[in-house]
Length: 242
Image (cartoon, rainbow, N blue to C red):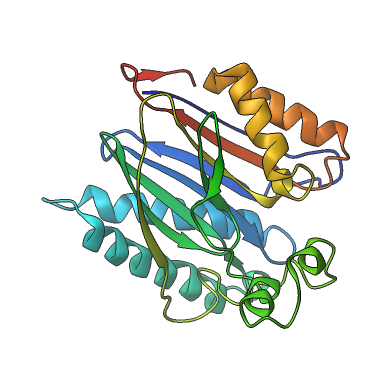
């Protein structure tokens, strides 16, 4: 397994409200995209990731159930912080955590940060966006084409830390040799479509170069948001390229 992760503030935003992390102890990759006024989004994403890992580090055993318990713990941490500090009022964050267990990836997901499975032939969005637009599409009130430039495309109906409880989506996916796990914030997917992402991944084939190329491409197309990407290639000896 090879992996690389990087975040960039982009060309427009002064602060980077994204937070990415690799927990080597539990083999978990995490990406969070914070929201809120002032620096609240930045605080929410970092606090969520750190409290999630803090919870896991106290465990004697580890499984998907404990990942869900960790989500509940970090949701409470962010929510309580938003109530105590007026400048943090209403803050929250998306949160996607992928636990790699050999060739099986277990995913806990909230919001519109995404996890993809990419092969030579296809790109599959494993996670489903917790957005108003996605719900309208599921209810057949808008078409897939109408989703693309919908004015409410970034309205989340689910985010970590905005309420006193959270119910994340859970996924499990098998990854074959030479397939890729790509995790990303919407700073990438708003500017580059899925097929373009697949082409870049397969053309370059090396996690570090893939991440750097995707970020550079998003910046060339405007870089109007923070851009965070985690790329994992399966089927090779574990190697950190951070």
